[in-house]
Image (cartoon, rainbow, N blue to C red; front, side, top):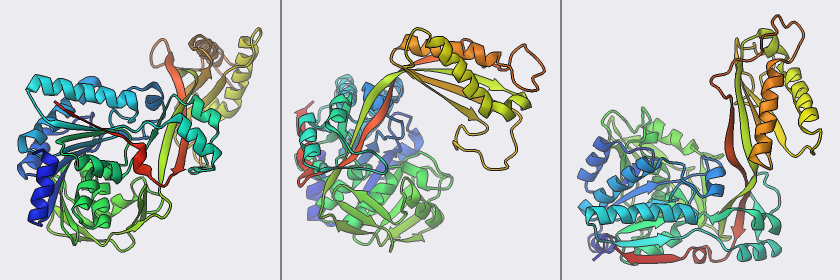
Length: 464
């Protein structure tokens, strides 16, 4: 009997609270061992890990590469796999390999199989793929079943064709189908982080609102605690609510810290949208159990009458090179809004003498508007700034040509009040121009309206 079947049968026979261990806020960046081992000692019914996000930007999805270091990724996967097998509970991992497309999922599976061979492990492995059919998406575009999120433009068939990889963010349905298939380990492509933890309890008729709210919090591990961190967290769920407890002694889950976490990644602190419906937190209640634990109740679930799946795709837009430099002359800093476009004009005239203007060049001035993108009116100028000039061009050579020319002419550009002609910039290292490789943008960030979202995500099962 597999781990998923054992847990399902046990709780069905003897209705009891369930325990869920959120092992890592994002697998591949390190799991503190003392807290994880403390979680194992509490005998959870499931160990879950979210492995990906769009927070890392479009490049990893476009290139099909992991954002995490190979050694750290293998170490984390080994830790959670051995831990789950040692207590015979399901291990569930979502958004495999950072972005959850085919190459990311396959790379994660290769590590899992290698660890299983090295450690002599034998188990049933379920795999959920998140890659979407381009033909199916183009048909959905023509049928008007795709809508943009936020300010994304209307999706076109051409953008579907040009995307390097396209994934759908699966919800609880595919996870429930997989967990019903007698498995020990489940590795999913791009997925809602809540599905990792909420699928099993909803199969056992625990309230969906409570299950999803619990999942939304513990997928970030102990980030909801004071002080916040990425140590493993344990949630104990029953029909009335759930209790949160960090497995690191120094972290406290308090009513204020847990309630504040409802703002995490949400424009509306009372509403969380999922493929199958909407989580309503307007009646949620948070109470201290003791100085380290918090109980949560009151979340409600509203099933959607228009199920949909968020789709993500990344399109290559060229090759990226950057210039990295600093400036400390107050006159330069005060005039930088005039200096930078003037130098950009000089560079354009030079590099486009015998070629079209086939690149984009932009600047961020850290200390003024590099992070906020707009300085506050009347704000005092800093003593020094960091300047990043970014070029995206059709080829790596073209991008490098632009930023190398930019370096020389920005270094010696004359401006009003300049006292020295020795140079306007300070370089942190040489060369200060760095080629970063292919550049991508999210060209699919839309909702696909479909009557059967679960059908988009096929299940594969193998025995290792």
